[in-house]
Length: 331
Image 1: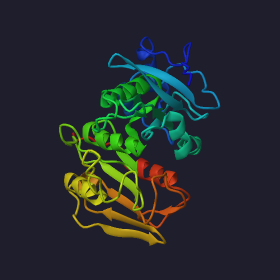
Image 2: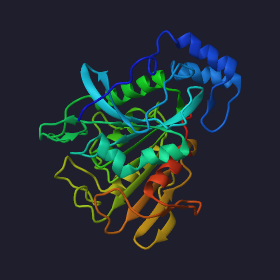
Image 3: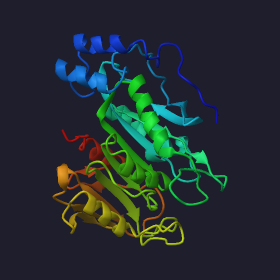
Image 4: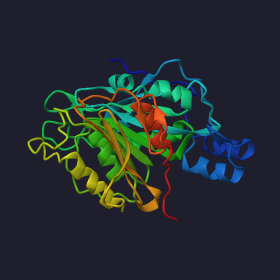
């Protein structure tokens, strides 16, 4: 796979810092959905680096592959910017992580997030994992044969880089992942809750988090899992780095978020059961969709949320869930 870089003034920053802030104050940097007040805009422009208001060359019609230096390593990611992008509007950012033996392009294809980003006006980055001792690409989430690199640092560096080079809303940065990428998403919820607003996980293998899971704040979480998953069994797999049963893992997040311990069914039709834990701290939500006999794959078919709204795909529901939970830090 060949990786390309933006050139010219399209993604340069540094010297544009003062210009960007002045532009935001003079012209107003709104969200992708609506304009914001000038005072709020100036504050967010500073928080999100120099990307807002900086000169930008319109993105190509397709996604591009990029590189980033993190921890002395050259790391790769795939980037999709909606064709309507304007550097005077603040855009949500979704980070989407592939599974073990996958890659960024595969994650883009199975999730369909780039197509949705064009419709809903958000930026998507698909980080790419490293090659592990088993000679497969993945993420450092615990198992001995997986890569041993600082992926949390990589993600943190990537967020900072994208905030500096694009007009990203720092209150609407989200993470989602499949399988091993779901496991990393779980770790990010534990370690980067001060930067990532909410997470959604599909068929994640929830290995124990090194150093424990102590998020800086309650964080909203959505998870999909099939009971017929033979790669990441619904009832756990002690042979693979002590993967717990999904409901045990969920109950741990319910406790961290201070929710009521018993879930409320929100949807049941055919082979899909949706349930939600209520009254969580800081208006967070823990939500789970159990798919009877569902396999280790990105879910197909439609889903219904807690309001009875039907979504054409799991990806549509994921976006609805994420964007409903922006980052709110204690003051």
